[in-house]
Amino acid sequence: MYDMTVIGGGPAGITAAVIALNSRMETLIIAERWGGQTTYGMELEDTEGREVITGETLLDSFRRQLDYLDFARHFDTVTRVVPEEGHFVIHTADDDRFEALTLVIATGAKPQRLNVPGETLLAGRGLSYSAASHAGLFLGKDVAVVGNGRRAQWATASLARKAHRVYLLAPEPLVPTPLAQKLNKMDTVEVLEGATVQQVVGAKFVEGVVAAMPDGQSREIPVKGVFVKLTRTPNSALVREWVDCDSRGHILVDTHCATSWPGAFAAGDVTVVSEQVLVHVGEGAKAALSAYHYLLMQ
Amino acid sequence: MYDMTVIGGGPAGITAAVIALNSRMETLIIAERWGGQTTYGMELEDTEGREVITGETLLDSFRRQLDYLDFARHFDTVTRVVPEEGHFVIHTADDDRFEALTLVIATGAKPQRLNVPGETLLAGRGLSYSAASHAGLFLGKDVAVVGNGRRAQWATASLARKAHRVYLLAPEPLVPTPLAQKLNKMDTVEVLEGATVQQVVGAKFVEGVVAAMPDGQSREIPVKGVFVKLTRTPNSALVREWVDCDSRGHILVDTHCATSWPGAFAAGDVTVVSEQVLVHVGEGAKAALSAYHYLLMQ
Picture 1 (cartoon, one colour):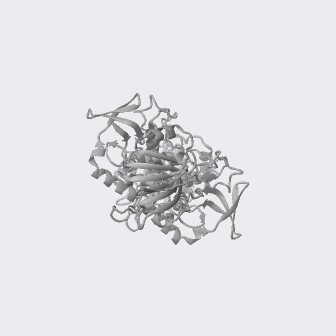
Picture 2 (picture 1 turned 90 degrees about the vertical axis):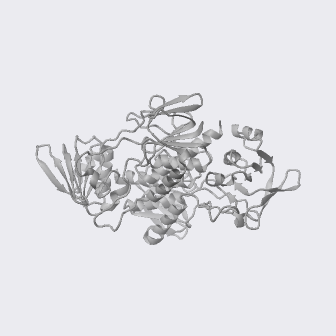
Picture 3 (picture 1 turned 120 degrees about the vertical axis):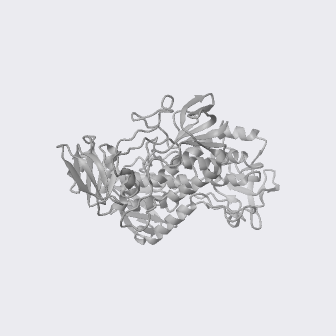
């Protein structure tokens, strides 16, 4: 019986596991791999070396700690979590079975890939999945944002304060929000509804995007940055039947990362939280400490 | 007019300022000094070198960034914050006056010093103000906790899982909680109600505490660690008249660090949150990003 099991190997899960181990809890982290869904570093043509996003170094050291503590990690896919009287039973794809007194769910959200040529090559070289992390690097440049929902709109508004020109490539009509109305009126923002990205162009760094326009024509737009902000789905299926979630599937947590189920805590992109690595680190730490406090009271 | 003013130079405030500057907000951080009230590092007789608490290195680099950006920082005491139509006016002891569209309150909590001989010398050398950060270092050792409230009780319960023996020196009767009842029954915990610490003893590292017992006698208790967990008061006086606080004065925030006043956010020990440096870092980042989102909607 573990004191705590963490599900997920992104920034929130990694931090939760390290904090729990530092608190001398019997801890197991189960992840398909280390990472998290976004690329945190960003290299641009005119920046020297690699622009390391704050927190990346910290997470590297956490990963190394966990690599060293092989008893505390298990690379596998969790297929089922069953809440039992006073503990949780976790089943994995490799038919392993673990028991834990507390649970930290840090399963993230489904990737939001474009799935077009150029995306993989140029990720971290002008192509980003996180405006909160990288928008500041595109001061005075032309950039594109892909998406139509709230996250795409926030990214566009944020970039509009910094970039020279922002193209919002919305495959579907913009979700109607007050911000969408503001974007349509901004001089530096061009909203292209019905535009579908076909390719991200660039030999070494992003040089542009090619989009299919609603009139059937292809248009190449020269940009130095592309922010992919398509709709994401939180990976909450494992617990959705017994933990309260919002209508989009995000796990609902209080300010201490507690879910509606006693002993179950959640952190990171599976909850509603800013997409910034330090925020995820903090939430992971908080979830681990809340689980620890919970344990002390049992 | 600044986009954002941060009040407080601890981990939450420092991180908020750095994240805001990275987001290209016009940012000012006002602090009496860099720091925060606790000592994060801990050196012990039998550990090699200095046990650096996770996050300290990160904060060092943030402080250096802010030292470099002298336009973004102001060392002074904030004496008054006035919420005006759509912005805040901040007055300082040196009669400066600043205006900002958003506010991050990261003013921490009043120190909880023992004010006895040995405390200053031995802080970070066995004497700690944070069980969440340092409890794990005292595996198998004898330690003392000073306090009678919930935080002292949590620290004692947490240490009881690791230390050999825990003395809870409670100057006043324990605040009645379910945990207090459990502590009284634990074999490894000795609750000394009415004991007042007179001195922390040790040449280079903590070797013991001297306490005045209720019977008038002095008792020297040999311990390797002392955790000071006296009652703290959140520094919320600047905003308490117009921002909702709990009965003990903590600023109430939602999961995005928003207070009850639009445009005002809070992070760290002035709110109710785990006393762990990475949690404060995450809360600071979150408050800054929430302020940024708020600004984009104006």
